[in-house]
Amino acid sequence: MSNIYQNNASPLGKLDRAKLRINGHSHLLPYPEEIPDFMRDKGIFWVDKDRKFMLQKDWNRPITDSSFFLNEKLAWMEHFNIDHAVVLNLSQLYGNGLRLEEMKKALRFQNDFNAKIQHDNPSKFTCGFVVHPGFVRGACWEIERCVEELGLQLLCLPTHYMDTIGTWRCIFDEENEPIFELADKYNLAVEIHPYDGEKFIKLENTSWRFHLIWMLAQCADAYHFLTLNGYYEKFPNMRVCFAHGGQLAQINLGRRIQGFDGRPDLFEDKEHPRKAVGHKNIFFDTLVHDTGGLELLIKNQTSKQVLMGLDDPYPLGEMESKKQSSYPGKILDLAIDRKIITKDESDAIWEDNVIQWLCGDDQKAKDKLTKRILN
Image 1 (cartoon, rainbow, N blue to C red):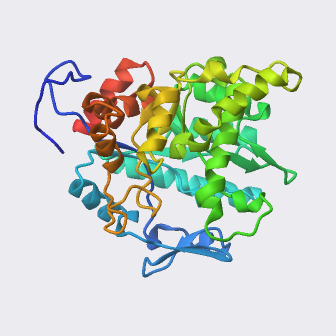
Image 2 (cartoon, rainbow, N blue to C red; image 1 turned 180 degrees about the vertical axis):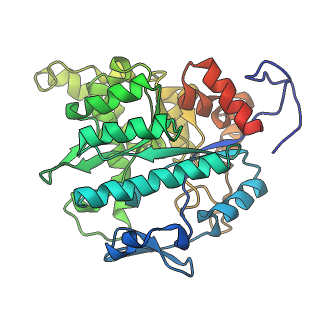
């Protein structure tokens, strides 16, 4: 951790210090021996003993970097001067299509695992928890447990989920308002992340199309309904961040505005898309892979609504790669060089904006988090 003090204001109001580097979008796998037997027995999720693959029934994916695991992650963070990371849930554990009891046990394992990671490594990790919106009452109970018993403050939700009759729905469906009411009550940060597109988009799963194209479309769809329903104002203590820069939502903004204006009959009692642009409670991470995409994101939403997201250690994350000539933080360094952002804006994307998303306007929570990171 950096201990170089500079002329930057500290949130604690004491000594000036170097700006923190906080990664707002990270993932962590349990070691194979930490995963309960029922997860493998039921084909829900497991990691092979050699740590080469993550697996589900009829599915596997190579583990492409050792920093998928805790000790290796800590070493990776130290190597790249990353002070703190926000650990999201694993997308494979949204629980879609599982029987109720299996889903509850799988999600509880994920949440308890993340809570232990945060508890044991408070200066290094802030961890999220996940619920299944298809079972709203149970989801609300789990939110209460994770906040009040486990001390977690980041709710992870999928862009889409399967309801109890097998229909796929957007997370910002009005039936889920009890979830958002609790997020508002507890002053939660909320992460919206896509997955499972191949289960409801009727296309052959080839050439990684669901990760390269459709995941971004899923984020755009969720943003569409968050803004139309005006949830950013209805639940003012809930702050939402969209993964992968909500990238297609940025290029699609003009079409949505024209559609709303041109066919108002289709949007009765809905909020105009323009009202949500740049709203203080809607954030996007930086993982758009090129400075042109980042520039559009910042022009639309302002740099204050953008936070650092590396999506490590996945290969679509901002990882060290000779072939891609990449490293964690490269996109912001390029953006400074190309005068898309200033150094101060880059520092804020790394620190202030992540903390604002996690804590909102609660200064005590901000000070507590900063103190925890500085140890």
